[in-house]
Structures are given as structure tokens and as C-alpha cells.
Image (cartoon, rainbow, N blue to C red; front, side):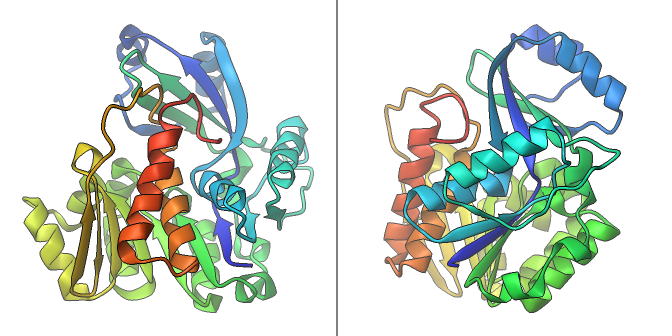
Length: 309
């Protein structure tokens, strides 16, 4: 395999809401809130009109994007042997993604993410991780890791205890490791661990401007450039309307954002950017072409509803 993704196996439930819904439910627009109480999640869910249901999860979206570009890819993510778990597996297999996880009867259901889209196309997510967040080192098979050129991880999956041990096992046995920092709240929760990963363990780090600035407590973007050059790694940063930039050791490559887009839903912009960039990287495209491919895919995905083509 070219790339093996390891991430939260989450079924995305897409709903349109107004600004009041966000305020009334004490949500912060544009971020992801983890909900641990099943009843709280059910109550939120019960007040919504569903637009679309799709097999999702950040890294899984990237892996499907890579498969659609004819790359040989796989995914490890934990689901329960329930109806959503079956749908999840079917969704990946249909997209020619090798799925390296055997479903089991679990006390906890398959994970679900409510994607709430406001009229300005911003998405606010409420995630009940379910069994997805219980991934452990036994779910990671060393031979599967070794058979892939790159493993791709998501910050959303990182947590102390079993998920952390699963991460460490995967990284220790990988040929190359890429990771997305996932979300600014995620970075705030795990700052010390993520900083150590970026400096010591990861070959490629994906982040948006807010996430990377939060990670290093940067005052401005020049601090980010300085940091990336100091650690001499491969950092890829999306900057919204300012475009995207890669910093590889001392070399900076930058491109602008695409203009005049009919934006419908920002869900999956970062996921598909990573897919395009990694496609370029594993197929040995130039640094600029990697950024261009990432930007092309992220620009397309935000002009439709949902994070899959």
C-alpha cells in the first residue's frame, strides 16, 4: 500500500441549522465539540433534520480521496458490529479502500458526528466517538503498518491510555508517518504531546494556520516559519484565503487560494487538501504541484455538501 490511514471511524450526519441553534446549544461555531454523554447527544440529534448520512472521519475522508485518485490505500478504524458499523465498512469497500478491522459486538455503538452547517457555510461539529475512540494497540497489526509506505494519523484520535499506545505502536513500526493536527481545541488539549510528535516523531505534519500558531504559542506567522525551519521537518499549512505553504527543512513553497468559489460547506476542506498533497508526495510531484493538488481538491469539496466526492 502507498498510504494506510488510522483514524476515528465516524458516520457523518449532515444537517443545516440557523445561527440560533448554535447559540442555544452553547456551541462554538467552526469547531468540533466532543460529547461523552449518550443522552446529551441523543437530545441534540432529536431536534435536527438530516440532509445526508455518509461514512466519515477526518483521515478516512483523506484516504477515500487518495483512492479516488487511483492510489493503493487502506484504513484502520474501530466500529461496532451494528447497522452503522456495517454501513461504514460498506462505504469504504465501495471506494476501493482496504479495511483492516474486524467488527465485534460491542457495548458502545459506532461513532457518529453531527455536522451542523450554518447559512454562511461554516461547519460546527458535535462528535459522539462511540467505539471509535476506544482503539487500542491490539487493533494495530504490525505487518499491515510495515506494508505501507506512509501511515497517516489524525490528532482527533490521540488520547491518553489505549489510543496513545495504539498511536505509538503504529509510529514505531512505520516506514514514514504523517499526521494532521485536526482541530484547534484538539491542539489545546494535547499541546505538549503534539509538540513532541511534530518535533521528534512525524515526517509530515498537516495543520491550518490557527492550529500551528496555537501549538507553538506564536504571536504571528513569522514565528511559525522560524519554528519550522528550526526543527527541519516537513510542515504543510493551509491558510484559508491566503493559500497554502509547505516548509521542508529550509525550503518554503507557497501558493495562493483559488478565487470566486461557490462555497456551500467547508466540511472536509482540510481532509481533501491532505489527500491531494499526499497524492502529489507519493507520486513524486514537485513541492508546488503537491500544494496545487491539495488546493484543487479542497476547492472542489467546499463547493458541495459533505466531505466525499
